[in-house]
Image 1 (cartoon, one colour):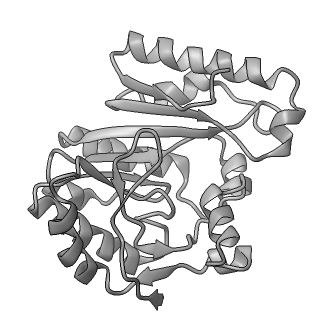
Image 2 (image 1 turned 120 degrees about the vertical axis):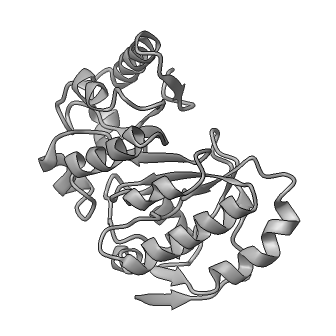
Length: 252
């Protein structure tokens, strides 16, 4: 595991459904090729040079020390802290990242701060021992393993992600799913309802379209397609009493 040090970690996110966030790893071993927005931004601002650099994650060694200073500074303004928007708190194959993530969640919870988790890895079952105000989520845009192996090559298999999420749900935890970035049929032909049925037990679903991929705009009537699938999500969630959020620019 490679390590770096930083001077700050907690910050207010610009993501529409987020509050504060923390990215205690630079890079991500999952190597998603949608392309990954976080990787593009890291490259743009000179934090990495290549895709290979991005796939060699660097853990912030002094993360806990930074939080000791920043929590008192921001505590009164924080509604929740998301782990993470620009990396993965439970990326596959890195126990060091998992251990640090759990310590960060514990520290924030001890200060009465709710955590919102999102991963393409496996949510550890020991999360049942943390605050029941926390929300645990996975990203799931398909059930097709061929698609995963091409676009999310080093992530956890979909069935394993869902099983770990279901275990936390059954233990009484709040759970959610980010169905984003959702692909057009020329990238992956699939049945959205089958995906929604696989996660129908969750408390909340966030849905968003795939951006930054030329194949999307090459798909005829792609705007109409995303309007229709967003409508399906809304109707499904309302029927099954699931909270939902449709990302900006998904419906046009």
